[in-house]
Length: 410
Image (cartoon, rainbow, N blue to C red; front, side, top):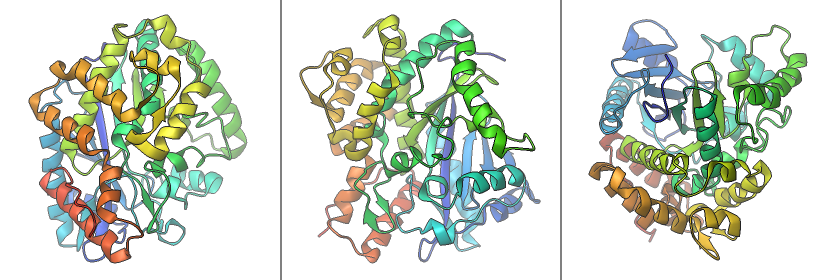
């Protein structure tokens, strides 16, 4: 069934499984599925939420079980599933941990691929790309799926999504630390995401999708080059171009949806869903052409948008944007931080957002992205003990479905 713009949504959240004692990753998603279902499966329907495995054995995904029109209750639904997972994992000395990257994991030695359903696909990915790096095995994100009915709606939605993508990490960055050190990027997940498929660059492109606004243009401009590039590596023809396309937003013509992938997972579902609601509100504003005409949205080249995005993944909300044409979209001049752009956008869409989500968005806009709050709590050159202390608190935030309150490190 096809849906019209903003009629329904699909949200996906990824979490890592870690040992409670030392927070080391624990690749036992298969055991979680067995405890839940009674036998090993890759997907479990749990009412309105579905659980599934991912590429690596320590990451589990929960997602809306089909499209939903109700985002107001979704944070609580995900939170209930978090508690259920944690209860099942408790006997195994394991818990879920939020944020988009484990701060102490060494992927080269700790990565373990999912060994069950779809393992042929994952093994092929591993053979082509070597999935031991952070970009494959230490990344957790939220995906937002937005429907379109036909080419006309795809054009409007794709144009709006492309324009917003560069500044989304300024709202959602939550991956500042790899292997015990600040990476220099508040969104290190997206930094490694850019190059983790460098062997076949057609798959990720410039992260920001190209100026393609119809199904035919998209197949000719993205899917065909991907299919051609992967053919020598995929003799069994087991890989699907919908999954191979790794841009920051991908068109899923198999279900008539655009999937946004540049959003780091937060500390709790309440924060994830609030960010999703905010992003959707701004996309509605862009699609309405109230800020900028469709034809002007379509003129933006991916290289220009990528240049902004590449700065935003470093400094998140503190990034100073100097591209005057981009600022003019939001009626801002002559320069502004990404945080200031989001505050302006919040002022424009605030009345369309429920009170539950407003308070969370306002906290993020006031206190900064989760990465900023994590770095505040860690302080300069944190010890492993300090990192564990902060991330154990983040684990409690997930269990209790509350925001992380950053207290400066003493």
